[in-house]
Image (cartoon, rainbow, N blue to C red; front, side, top):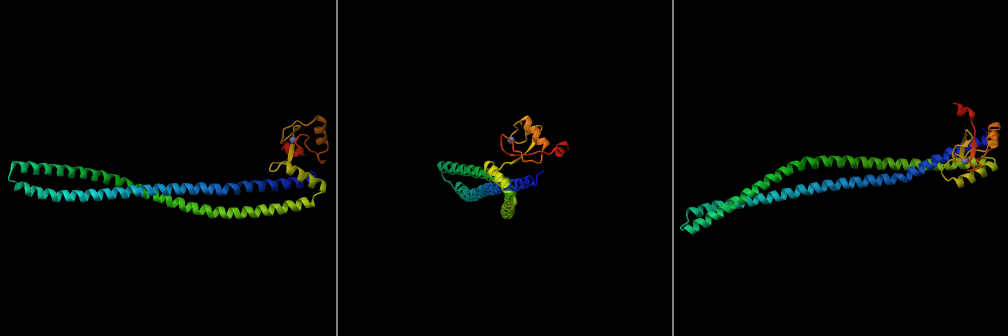
Length: 241
Ligand SMILES: [Zn+2]
C-alpha cells in the first residue's frame, strides 16, 4: 500500500472515532434526561401511594372518633330508654338506638376494610421507596459517569483533531487535497473502499474490466472508484485470508 494511502486510512480511523464520539456525546444527555424522567415518575408513584396511605389513616381516625361518639350516645340512650315513661318515647329511643348501632357497625366494617388496605399499602410503599432510592443512586452515578465520559470524549475529539491536522500537514499536497475533498463529500462515512471481486466495496459499482485489471496490476498506484471517487484499496493477501 502507498504510504499516503496508509495515512488516509489512519485519517479515516480518526474521523470515524471522532464521529462515533460525537454521536455518543449527543446521545448522553438524552439518556440522562430519560433516566431522570423515569426517576421522577417513580417518585410521583411513591408520593401517590403515601397520599393514599395518609387519606386512609385520616378516614380511619374520623370513623373511630365517630364510633366513640355513637357509643357514648348509645349508653345515654339506653339509660333514657330505661326511664322512658311512654310508649312513644320507648319507640323513639329504640329507633335511635337501632340507628346508632347500625351506623357503628357500618363504620367498623369500613375501618376493617381500611385496615386491610393499609396493610397492603405499607409494604408496597416500602418496596417502591427502596426502588426509588436505588434509581436515584444509580441516576447520580450515571450522571457522574456521563460527566467523566463527556470530558474524556471531548479530550479525545480534540486530540484526534490535532492528529488529523498533523497527518494532513505531513501529506503530499495532492493527497491532502484529495482527503479534504472526499471528507467534504462524505462528512462521516468512509473515504477509502476496498476493491472486491471487481466491485467498489462501498458504492458496490462494478469497476470497468480494464480499470479493475489496472488496479490488480498496479495496486500501489492511486486508484479512485469512478462512481463514488473514494480511494480504492486492493489487498489480495487480505482477501485470500
Ligand atoms: Zn465506489
